[in-house]
Picture 1 (spheres, rainbow, N blue to C red):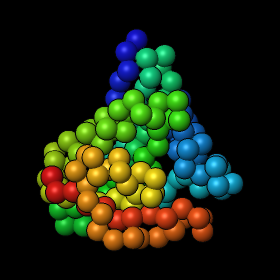
Picture 2: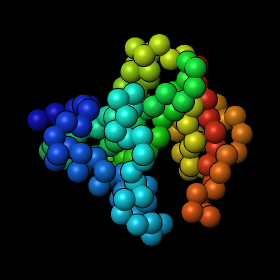
Picture 3: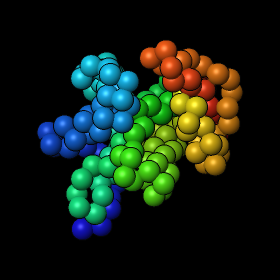
Picture 4: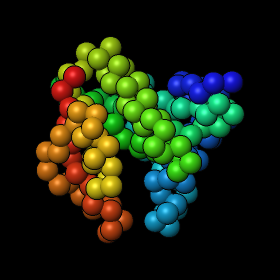
Length: 147
């Protein structure tokens, strides 16, 4: 089996999708299970993507939703630590940027953790301004990219 990008479809896909979001984005800061979910995850306008490693394990996830006229927002991007540095994040973003273009969006925004700003800058995103500090310790920056 080769690595692949897809949308979660089965209950097992969704369970693995949310488990990775929790493990990477919430558990290290002692946040409760369930905090990795968002009220608009089930909205028909939200696009979800997962990246499967060659062994079939879900090792990357992200989502896109419309956030304003012509604008989409990427949220909950998570890559398993074992796969960071292997272009998984780039593949997830490429998929979501293509989906945004298909939806007629002309801009993507996101709130990047300070540790991820360089990654997004290498992919054409620019820092607009500091945004918020998550869990009191994780500074984020609003970033933007024209499509």
